Each structure stands twice: as structure tokens, then as C-alpha cells.
Image 1: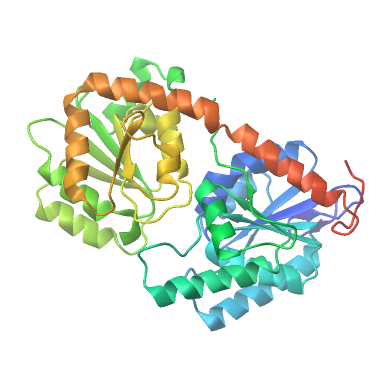
Image 2: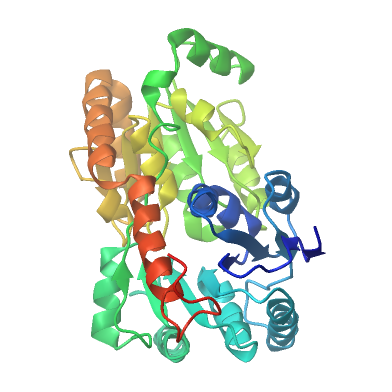
Length: 401
């Protein structure tokens, strides 16, 4: 079969969707299950993101991947190159839908899709880049960019109810109406604490050289200042009279040296393991007793959903997204961003009260089963794709469903 840039030759009646993200980990961790769902239902699905190990990982799963560098910072020359390369690629593979994710890929991807004449452009908001507390000029600039981008977008989807409200208040409106709330979720069969025996949990702890009786505190996220790793280290320094071990999981974004120095400075090197990026997240969450996400900005954090699906109580900052997932005092605790004292207090309480950890973990699992099932999110997005693809105005191939 003739292949075009990883896709088979385009056939009438087979819709093609390309997902564009800034970094590969978004595609692999946040979009893979949904894209499998779409592929099983007759769509051709591919990815575009900056060069990363996830490219080969997704190719092994038979997904077409095009690696095009997208600078995460504002860089006009680099951004123009990205737009030009994306535009050329879209004209070659002729997708019916370009679906962009994350802020920067959302800008360059949507511009390129429009220039290439892609019939339909969809964008998922993973947290607007402007938020209270940032410098006013930066806030206004980012808001204006989002308003401009909405004007060239057919449909915008939101994982967060707060972002839907923000769009209404600020006048961010795509061509075909307001933001569509789809929520977020995980595969609740994959993230199931009942699928791990005590023997399996002990084996995982042994591989990490953690004693069977030591509680484990875990944080998953890119290692940068915005995620609040430094606040967690400061809080852990203050935890008293109880054993614990901590796991930091995620790729470095230029902040690892600073965190490592802080850990060493406080004499915590033997208690905090920096594991980098891992693929065995369910195994690591299976041995986790407390999950922490002290971020300063989030969309709707998938890691909190994964942790609670695994019946792990969570401590997170009281910001957009986090407070939609964690029910304060029921499935975990919410604290103010940057408040390492409150973070330490929440950790101390959970470490000292195993019964509380158990109750909150069970409530978290129940809540995820009710509200954060990835299959339901996939069905919502698929329904939107069907609507778009069956509209002659937006599809090369009308009436396909």
C-alpha cells in the first residue's frame, strides 16, 4: 500500500484526524487512549509534536507521527518556521480535521491548518495561559492571542468548567459557538487499585529500595518552577516524627539542578528519589500513599485523576482544575499555592492517620468512577467529530457516518 508521511494513501470514506501538541508526552500520556478509541471506530489518527522519545513509542503502536519542532516560548522566527513546516505537512496528508492541544501548539497549529485549507480546525483548551496573579500586561496579551485564535477555530473544547466560564466572561468564542465542556478522564480499568495484589506492591517497593512499612509520597509532573517542586521539598523538610519516602516523576525542564541542590541542602537525598520520566505510572501509584500536586497553574490535571482512580488521597493547590478534581476534606486537601506550611500540615495529618488516608482514597475512587471516565470523554469528542465530518461544509468526505 502506498504510504504518505506515515498514512496510507487517502481513501474516500476514511476520515483523517491529526492531533498537534507541543511535546510528545502530552500525546502519549493524555491523548493515546482517546486516539485508540477513535481509530477503533474507523478514523485515521496521527500526531504532530516536537522531536521526543514518544515519537518512536507511538510509531510502534502503528500511529503516524510527524516530528516538527515547536518552541514552547514565544519566538517569532522559530514560530514562523513551525507554521511553514506544519502547513506543508497538512497540504501533503490532507487531514479532514486538525485538532490542536496546549497553548503554543494551539497557536501555530491552528494558523498552519487555516493556511493549508484544512476543512475543520478544533482546539482543546488544557487551561488558558492567562490567569489571575500574573502581570497585567502578560495577562492582557495572552487573552488577546486566545481571542484571535478563537476566531480561526471552528470548535473549542474544554477540560475544565472554569475555563468555560472564563471564555464566556472574556468573549473568547470560536466560529461555531462557545466552548464545549468535555471534561477529562482516565482508563478506570487500567487505573484500578484492585488489580494489584499485596505481593505486587511489595515487589514494586523492593525495586525502589523502599521498606514495606514506609508511606510513599508521590508527585508526577514536568520538573519546572511552575509545578511547585520546591514547595514540596520545603514542606517535606518540616515533616516530623514519621517515616516517609518520596518519588518525583517527570522530565526535566531546566529545573532539576535547582531541586537536587535543595534536596541535598536539606539532607533529604536518602528520602527523595528523582525517577525522571517513567512508563510504569500505575505500578508507582499502586505503592503511593499520598499524592501531591502543588502547582501554580493547571488545566485539569490528569495526574490527580490517575491518583484518585488508584484510591490515593491527594494534596493539591486550590487553583483552577485542581479544585475540580479534589474535593477538599473528602478526597484530599486543597492548599494555597506557595504555602509550604499548609502543605506540610496536610502531609503530616495524612501520614499520622492511616485510616484517614484509606477513607479519602476510597472516596476519591468513587468520585472518579462517577465523573472522570475516559471512555465518556472519548464518546463526547467522537460525537463532535461525527457532526463535523457529516457536514459538507467541513469535510472532504460528507455523510460518512
